[in-house]
Image 1 (cartoon, one colour):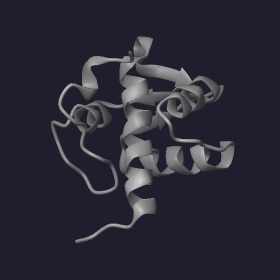
Image 2: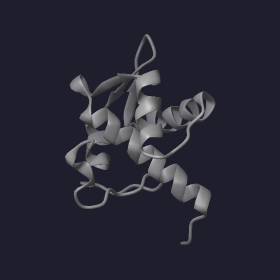
Image 3: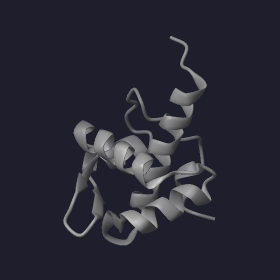
Image 4: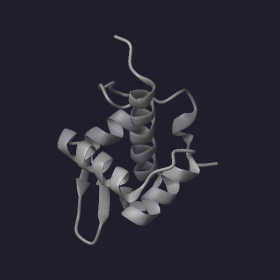
Length: 102
């Protein structure tokens, strides 16, 4: 199945979110820090778009939305971010991509 360019960008942005949480102490970041990390990877992300992506990832069980705007990576989300499992809607990481921010 062919995906659109927008779907590919969304899948890559979702992976960037999961990887950011995986690199964070305690697998937790607040939304502001998370947005900054995602934008450093090249995906310009409005607050509304980030909230939409976080809602989608939470619905899939890859993250938990905590109080005080904190976001936590679940064990399933870690499996997705490391490429242990492949799921529709999140890009699979490339080799070496899960080694941490540079």
